Structure formats: C-alpha cells, structure tokens
Length: 619
Image (cartoon, rainbow, N blue to C red):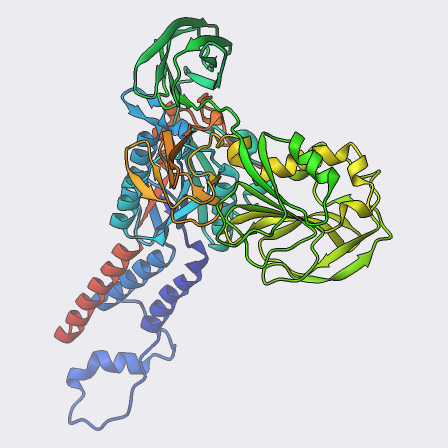
C-alpha cells in the first residue's frame, strides 16, 4: 500500500470535532407542564451541573465517524502497486532507429518495443497521462499528454523504423524538457541503446522525476556491406566491395554482384573473423548503368544492410560559353585547363532565350536576363534586376575566407593575394559571402531563380590573383560547383537526408523513379533540385528530356552505416546507469499504482445516504 497524499492528514481533525459535538450537554428551556411524573430522566439531566455528558451508543454518531474516516482516507490517496507506470505523466520514447529492425527471435526489436509500449498504455491508471515520442532522425511527438488509450495504441501501431541516421540526443532533450515542465513526470526509453555515445548528461534536465531505460535487444551478430564502389575501367567496370562483421563470432557467407536488370555477374564466398572486415575486388564486369551487391551471411540479425547499389561515374564534357568583350587572357586560358569543358568564346552577349549551356561566364558584363544554365559573373559593371550594384570601393585590407569549409575554397590560400578595388554588392537573397576584404564581399555564391550563381566582384586585372597558385585551384572549384552534373556524381544518401541534385539546363521534362517503381514529376526550374529522400532503400533514376533526347542518371539510397553495429548498449544519463536486461524487463514494468481515491469517495457518499435514512426514521 502506498500513500500519495499524506499531507492531507490534517483533515482527520474532523473526527474529534464530531465526537465533541456528541459529548456536549444539550441546552434546555423552562416549560410549564401538568405533571413531572413522566419526566424523571429529563429532570436528571437538568439537575447535572457539568457541561459534558457520558458518550452513549448512537447509530448516527457511528455513521458520521465512518464517513469522516473514509473521507480522510480518500484525501491521503492510498494506492495499490500494480503492473504499469507510477508517474502521473509519462513521456514514453520509442527508439525507431534502423538498428531496431534487427531480429530478436521471430520479431524485430521495434516490434518488441511496440508490444511493451502497448502493455504500458493498457495499464494506465485513472488520472495518468502519457506523451509518446518517436526517436528517429528527428524527434516526433506522436501524442501529447493524453489519457486516451485508443489514441495512444493507434499511434504505436503506425510506428516504423528510420533507415537513415538517428538523433537520440534530440529525442532525449525533448523528453527531458517536456518532463521538466510537467510536475510528476517520468521518462521511459524503449530501445537498444545503439547510439549511447551521443548522449550527454545535460540532455535530461535534473528536474525530471525519473528516467528508465528498457533494453530491447540481445543479439549482436550482424554482417553488412560497408562500401561498394564502381568505376569504368579499360576492360569493363571495376568494383571494390567491403564487408564488415560486427558480431562476436566468425561470419560465413557469400557475396554476389548483379547488374541493373538482376543478371548475376560474379560471386564469391567469405569467412570474416569477429569484428573484422574483408575487401573484394571485381574486374571486367559487363557495362551497366548501376550494380547491385548482395551478401548472404549464415547468421545475421539485420537484413537491411545486406544489399547496396553502386553507380559508376565518368566525368562528361560540359558546355561553357565565355563572354568577355574586352578580352581576358588569364580567364580564357584557365577555362581551357580546368574541368572537362568545351569552351565557346563569343563576342556578342547571349539572348535570354539562347540555347541552354551548363555554364555561362560573363567577364566585365552583366546580362539583363539570366540565360538557361548556371552563371559566373566577374567584375560586374552595372546594376540589374537580379544583381544590385552599389558602386566601387578601393580596398585597404587583404581578402579573407568567410568559411574554410566552403567547397569553393578547398585548398585555396588567399593570404598572398592583393586586390586594388572591387564592386560593392547589395543584398541578394539566396546568396552567401565566400570571401571578404573588410566589409566588402569579394566572392558570392548561391542560388537565384533556380540557377547556381557565383560572382567575383573584382576585375582580375586589378589584382595579382591570376599570378598566384590559388587562381587555377579556385577556378577549378568554381567550375566544379557550377557544373556538378559533369564533375561529380549524385551522392549516395540515406533516407531522411536533404539531397541537392544538379539538373541539366534546358530540359523540358523531368521525373524521378523510386525503387518501388513509382514515378513523380520534378517540379523544378533552373539547374538545382532539392529532394528529401524518402524511406526507401535502393536505386533511384532521374530522367530528363530535352531536344536532343532523354538522359537518365542514377543514385543509390542505403541504410546508415552507423545502424549496422547492432550490439545492444546500456544507456545512461547523468552518470547513473539505467539499463535493464531482457530478463529484468517484466519486473521493471511492475512498478505502477492503482489509486483507491474514487472508490473511497463513493463509499463516503453511500454512508452519508444511510445516515440520512437513519435520521429520517429517528433511530
């Protein structure tokens, strides 16, 4: 028996108060009667001089004392221990990371977590509420402080695993913040503790009532494909594949490579020691736009990392138009050497409806309208609708990189570069500063009207930049960034990632085909499309139709590497271990309470009803 409201015991003072009322002698009045023969007992009371009388057996007194005792007992909120949860408000966090898809017997860890969560919901006591959070790539509050069991069960039934990278720290911080703002709250985490290294003591505020971690996993045996790379070779396609064994025992199995049509191309076997790796190389594979590698381990708990796609990439030649009315030997020479580009030099400004090109370079000239394709502007000379020019300024400071991690500045050293003057640019939404000299932005880059645009705000002839080693490196970075379709493949990504896909300029129709065969039009103009990768693993295809025909490009989506190590870990917060083994899980759930307050209140009403009937009958 537990007492959840002992602070209300002062209400017990009502019991002696009732008794005192029955001990007080009744006050009498003088009355004239014809005879006192029948009033002997009454006269005895009148003759008593003490204000108290002897307590007599009285049914009304007994009923009133019983009602008072039951009322005080109800106010102390007695509760019996039951299977369930003890907190008035429970923040239940269910781990939905990819490792929760690992098999534990006949069901996955996620299925076990959902079953455990449903059992906790069904044992919610009266007055208890629950907030349900899914901990995936970002925390998602599915139900907020609800006592509706059907709503909670329905939300649990819709839970699915996140195949990309998970962020348990954000989920724990959110759960802790909710618990801190709700008195009487506790946090329960159902998961495998897979990413414990990301958790920090500050994630769960100290004001939270409690934190309990229930371990959902036991097995650690898993082998997965860590890397699969293909590239065109002299006699066909060359492939390199690595398999990692995350388990505690030797892993044996086979590895097979297929083409995009499912035709078997090559196969091999492996025996990898515990926590070891093995690399396979395949040469002279028949030409195919994509390849699929599959492993079949003898003992394996996670299937989602046993298959992966690879797309071979060979840089294609891009088309560049260089417009420099005054001539620029440095620029013309560097454009011929960087990248794999076909450079066309023109003497007349291109029309807005000109044929699409991968890259347009304007030196000392700013077009009124942007032609189809990405744009590089050097030394802008005038203001236009899309480029706000606010004059020119002499520089008294050297150029400095705004962010060393910017892809345009990779291996570029600006310390020995001297620039005399530069144009002053106004605010341009979608553009970022790349290089500054004091308050003057020397290089900008970003996206305008769906096009990638880079602006070099100074004339190359007014600097020694073309004479420095940094110049060809910088131009190589700029050309690669402005023409990514020719320079780099579409990156392999994970579900939930935000992927930036370069588009072919001038395409009149675009669509994406998902691994399940579903097709979706790409509603994007310009040369860039931002896509949030859905929860589908496999090969994606981008089809672009132009006047010259249809071009198809591929990219793969795979499970996050971090989820392949399924070894269960103990999750701890604030330095206190709260992990529980599978065998302790059932015992841990038997910590709830069932309050008896409402039952006692009903008994009080019943006793009062009986007392009223006794009083009416004059007992």
